[in-house]
Length: 190
View: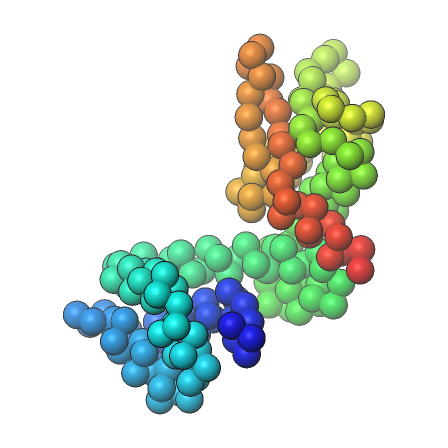
């Protein structure tokens, strides 16, 4: 997929197709392929025809309820804006499109600190002075700047697939690092 080169391109085309059409038809896949041809996306058509699994996946996606697909595309769009808000060069674009959608400074700081620690899991420890976040398999802890919004930040990081929530044997909250989080931190540092 050299010329379309990305998942984002294909999803963008599906989004454009669905937003131009207000109702669903009996054969959305066929109409999508015709729409691609009308819009002169021959390379995309060739890639779909040459990748059987991609064609089946698109057909399955387009067979779903029209409103449900649009809702999922909107969720995906929001997630991409939140991620892009942390990547230099895309920060201003993301802010212009959705000024309130980005990760907070604290949420991004959690990812950076976690990545720098070299660890893969941290534990929330509740004590008399509040909560602290100890990296379990490396040295260090995660410094929190605004405890009022820590749950909101951790929830958002989990929703975006940047952390994986878990529990230890005692019921304490654990958070595991994902490859996507490390990639985001690397891209933000470029």
